[in-house]
Amino acid sequence: MARSEAGLEAGLEASIEASIEAGRPPRRVLVRVAYAAPVPRSVSYGALLALVACGAATPTLLGPSEAEREELEAAPDLRRRLARSEHDFFRFANRPFARQVCADLGGAVRAAPTVNLHGDAHVEQYAVTPEGRGLADFDDATEGPAAIDLVRFGVSLEIVRRARGWDEGAGPFAAFLEGYRDALREPEAEQPPPAVAARMQATFTADREPFLREVEELMEPVEDARVRAEIEEGYGRYRRMMEVEHPELPAHFFELRSYGRLRGGVGSRLDPKFLARVEGWTEAPNDDVVLEAKEVRELSMVPCVQSGTGRGGFRVLVAHARLTANPSPFLGIVPRAPSEAHDDPPFWVQEWSHNYRELELGALRDGGELRELARDVGVQLGRGHVRLIAAPFDSQLRFAQLEWLREREGWLREEVRRMTALVARSWRAYRDE
Image (tube, rainbow, N blue to C red):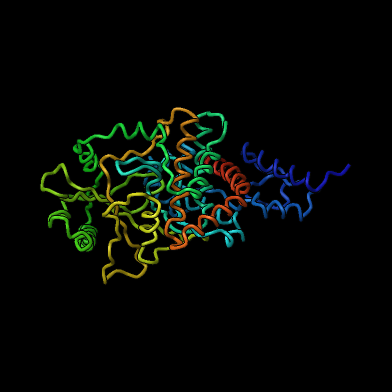
């Protein structure tokens, strides 16, 4: 007896997912899709198109671009790290990941409200400072559909949950969406800190010396005299802007004590960035201020977000300020020099707090703590996604975003499942090269 078309669709999707999980090559392909699953001869063209339209097909594996592969040759430690850890690989492949979510949204992106985006939401972006807690590191901050952040954080939660061997239980993604929804409804409601955040905050100290020593160790000397001159000239422009913005500071506050190249990070490891140590309130070394300058990242490969370095790179600052409760007073863009080419990417600057703790995955004790953290990040994004982007109509945007979430929650859950599988397959392919 012939199977129904609906049954064929279900069987095809199950076959696709099984191939992803097992990493098997295709035995027979009617139409090549990214998951390269065998397609039964009896599946109608219409049924296949239905699967493609709902997002079951993905065009390419995720991973480093050709240019990034060349740069990775000079960073063997990072190459090894990406091959060892699925979550680190996922962190590195942010832009191709976001591009795929855009593609899976398809025409639905036109109906999605535009919100402030973190752009690279994952569990290890969670940080605690004396001023607050939540996602940090805003290299990819921009504007676009909320699915970019929601799907990415959902996949991160699932990778972490599986790696730690925790049962899904009530589900960290469900807790994340619950926090997001609650913050859209009541953005001013107080939220208790997750247990892991309280433990991180308990490690804070008034002693700045270890932090300043670490900063000096992280700085790599800049040997090229031309590059040093460009850095110092750029810093001079930033300093003059900050002195106008903060006339209350002493004249020596931004006096440059030392600077160097910074090589850390995973997703940002290959980006140009620098650390600078400046005088601070007094001439005593223990109140020096540390500033990080980072090149504004090009996002043109992600078609459904505001991309490029237009608007002078201010997209990073604006989203940063809207998504955090207490942005640094020294957050800023390095003003352009008249001699700079129009396509030279600008740099943005942020302050480093000496009591800054990024979450380490091993700090989470169980799945319950992962769910607590997921809810906390959901609240942060629920508040920040809509903050001021539609002012004075924030309340209307919250309503529209709640309606969008109600309509698309099922799709979001499916997309998290599909993208988790794609990340796993992409990582295995990279690891086994």
